[in-house]
Amino acid sequence: MNNAERADPTTHFDVEAVRQDFPILHQQVNGHPLVYLDNAATTQKPRAVIDAISDYYLYDNSNVHRGAHALAERATAKFEGARETVAQFLNAPGREQILWTRGTTESVNLVAHSWGRTELKPGDRILVSAMEHHSNIVPWQMIAEATGARVEAIPVDKTGTLDMEAFESKLKEGRVRMVSVGHVSNALGTVNPIEQIIQAAHEAGALVMIDGAQAVSHWPVDVQALDCDFYAFSAHKLFGPTGIGVLYGRRELLEAMPPYQGGGEMIQHVSFEGTSFGPLPYKFEAGTPDIAGAIGLAAAIDYVNGLDRAAAVAYERVLLAYAEEKAQATEGVTLVGTAAHKVSVLSFLVEGTHPNDLGFLLDQQGVAVRTGNHCAEPIMEQYGIPGTVRASFSFYNTFDEVDRLFEALDKARQFF
Ligand code: PLP
View 1: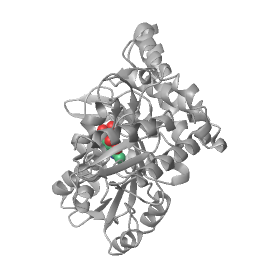
View 2: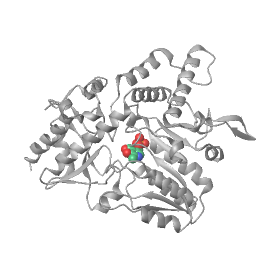
View 3: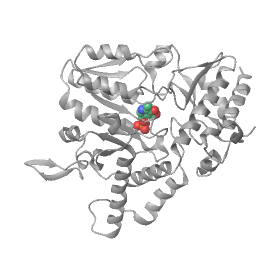
View 4: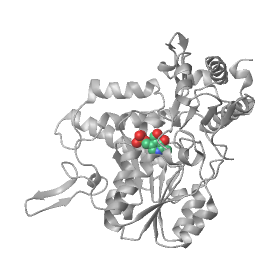
């Protein structure tokens, strides 16, 4: 049976057509056709994104906002147009609530340092989940150390599901100022019930930051419907370039927050007697920004918007279910992360093997996965494991590729 015959006909998703948009997928690696299953680390880029970046450098390259010439005007129009594209993508109320950052990591650092530095007092509490990526733990620890606040983990059970009862009791204990959780866990694939988390946190008087790094590539996000205070993501996990990301923030919070970094672009007036800062969003954007990155991200969003997203979501769900079934039917394979609501990620262990050795042997057969703790050391420690093998899927992966993964696993196991 080929991929089309195996895909759930209700998904109506033409994966073969979509694969044509991604040049990198059509190559041999170590003598085998590439099977790219490392999408949670970074996604591949469609030609439209590569072309948008190259066209910018070929025809429009200039600094933005300050030039008195045609190229500067074109670069500025594209750069600010990209901000508008992101605002619409997240359904943000205004484009000035979209801040460019280097990625999710910098977005969390920006909130932790700017909001945290002025708002947190000794004894205040910040809640994160036990399955967070390090980038949603360490910035909070740093600001907690500086302010006397403390970071606490919301427990996660052995399936990778957040303990909502424990979360609500923590809220009841008081003094929770910030709840910062991942929309989707990169290590386990768990989709967290963020609507419920946001509502409960707000009722307790806490703000909520959502790390959307692993979510935006899988389904549309509406920050107004979610009612979150901050939402962060990285372009490179959404088929865009590396080095650029986004922070969405509630307007009144961003207005009250001090700048994160100082320099050019973010000021209104500078003198040795005192400096005043620019309006949103520029107050948070010191220095020459990643102009090509913003344009590349906008092209990625246009690309994703041009797909039938409902069909893509359904296709990815069926693909993951197929991979999970195969894993469960394979002797000696244990899934790590079996929450009821999951997306994209198949994290697993194979009896008698170390994840890193398996990763190497899979690579020799052209299958790209990630191994290790996936920057989520606390949850690996809780499970008493050094890490996992992680295959993470995107809508351009196929059922044949899932078969290739399991065939390669079988072969790899013969070495042990
Ligand atoms: N949060 C999650 C859930 C992630 O998966 C990642 C990256 O793997 C990050 C944050 C950090 O993203 P970046 O390295 O693009 O800043």
